[in-house]
Length: 314
Image 1 (spheres, rainbow, N blue to C red):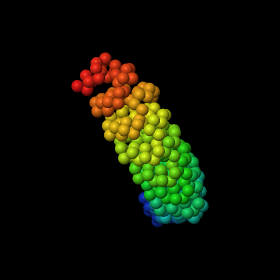
Image 2: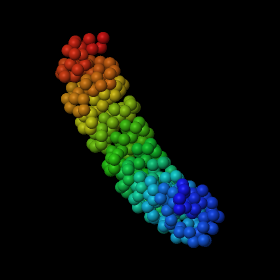
Image 3: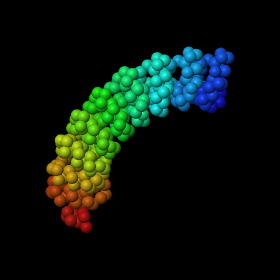
Image 4: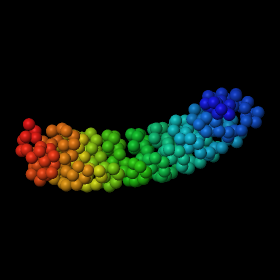
């Protein structure tokens, strides 16, 4: 024991030295001995897609042992897109839906990196598409958060719940709207995702996209029935979220679609104070042109120190 690899079997398995793996096993080396990073030989062979896996399995390697960041051998093979390795492990009895590691189960792990072949294999072998667990909550949320459109469509085709709210990123539509994944936003909406679902840091999808940068997605969710003055989340409403980030085009769009300019609540209190935070005159001008200045005296005092409306923008 010692060194970067911990033991000889781990080192040989890591580097794919099949003959040395066989020799060591023939000499009675413990097949499940911990090596580098406290992982076993099967885990590292699965990670690197080495043929030593077969020998290790034949000699009694623990197929479902919990290991490292990814959990088990099946998860690590899924993470790297090694469909042949995943199939071999499944054929030998790897547990399909068991949770373990950062991403949860094998389906979530494969979905994270967009490995279509592995996702199909796991689903064909009976993986539960809505299984909950891991950092993102489930496979659909994992794929959505990471912009994996093809995987999102595949999972939806296999009956993934488009309105599931689990994990740290509970509202999928809110997440993909914020990240600017327009194609996935369209796909989720086409499959029945609730456009006004409440929850998460931004409260709802319209506020999330207004805070980010996509005018096209803002237009899209509005056209799909997003409530323009819906309240909730850190910034209370979409207009304040767009104003604080100086999203001029989105501020203009929201105002043109009837956003209430004088709402008093949220992180900044009102849209004018939110716009002041951006230090950009244009959103402030847009809001003042809507007569926000008549009602939002607290925001105006902060902005122009009791000067007239025009002095602020001179």
